Amino acid sequence: MSTWFITGASRGFGAELTRAALDRGHQVIATARNAQQVRDRFPDAGENLLPVSLDVTDADQIDAAVAAAVAAFGTIDVLINNAGRGLLGAVEEATDADIRSIYEVNVFAPLAIARAVLPVMREKARGTVVNISSVGGFASAVGFGVYCSTKFALEGYTEALRDELAPLGITAGIVEPGYFRTDFLDGSSLAVSAGISDYESGPVGDVRTMAAGANHNQPGDPVKGAEAIVDAVDRGGFPARLFLGSDTLAAVGAKADEVRAELDRQRVSAAATDLA
Image (cartoon, rainbow, N blue to C red):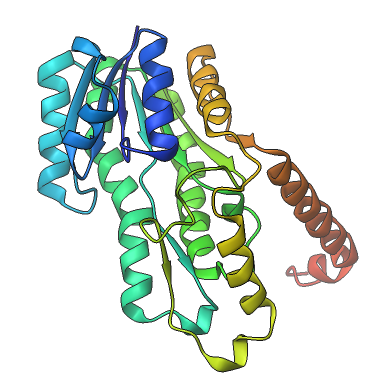
């Protein structure tokens, strides 16, 4: 049995991760903006569940949630930074407010939560930090450029964090889901930038139409995805990247091939810029 701290636990991946961890006998600190939503979702969870209200952008609430977790269960073995938001629109369409808002949730919040939890893990010289990214954190997509940039940032610092924590007995890794049948494309999770008419008939307009039609028709099964994440944690040695979904495999494979081909084309000219 281990103790899990999960953000965004009232619905979607967060709720399924909470359910899967509880089913394995783990203790779970399940956080959401409204802890009552977690209680309502898991009415029979018993003493292994601690619902905690948490706005992930509020530093005081983060500290209070971690303190409550340690007071209740004595430690935190697994951190799942799952809470996040999306932003649909061309890069040019995104306002400063749009961009700052999504970076607060997707980039700064996981950093702040990790900083609050890691002292607990370092004291025990063990732990696993899992940051939920996206296929968009590896291969950006038209209409989701700003959102993807937040996941690129998340992946960038998680790669370094993994190497920094390894000598301390702690593992850090990323999950890259494709399109899973959650509420991500709902208005509750996905903001939409105000439109610029020049983009309406192009690929950005196509993505807006696609997103509306794909909502709750995505190919990924969040129950299976959550089970795969819990399996990877329980096995130990969480991977640098955990790929979820056939669409992720296709997108990551295509970009890897593209980057390799571009690298090969520029091998001579790139090496030629070294000092003689």
